[in-house]
Image (cartoon, rainbow, N blue to C red):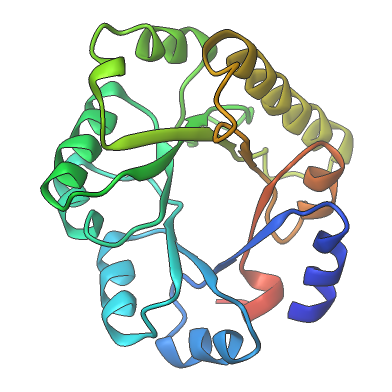
Length: 216
């Protein structure tokens, strides 16, 4: 399955993040041995445990909701945090990254689904964050794009609309705040059930777990 998905994504240069949450390090190692190097975790405790146990050339992404008091545990090694949904969190990531002399890539998470349980910013909240006087002073974080999760539904038209909405948000932010920054280029959307739709709508990163690891 890994090779099939990679072949699909290669045509669009979309990155595959293998979501290994709740699966043991041995399962991660199976995909690693097949050539996969980017893995995503939802929980900090699980992420740190796997980072310690597995090869050090793995690129780890934190894709789940992140509490500010947990940032310090992943700041030494995390490659990208997909779930930045507040100024307070972004400030803490910058603070912890500075302690390790690192710059951490971050995605702004937007609430695009109709479900109320999803975390994320709306456009107005993102504007306040990006226009904050303190934002240019954050030297240890780099906003490289956006992330969103579509509604969990069989209605493909609705999912497509939500993905299209996130692409529009990305385009607006790019034009308004990052017009000269080539590093602002990522749209993290699409999971096992809808990644093909997401790629059609402009995703540059898909977060696939079940198709690769099986049901949890």
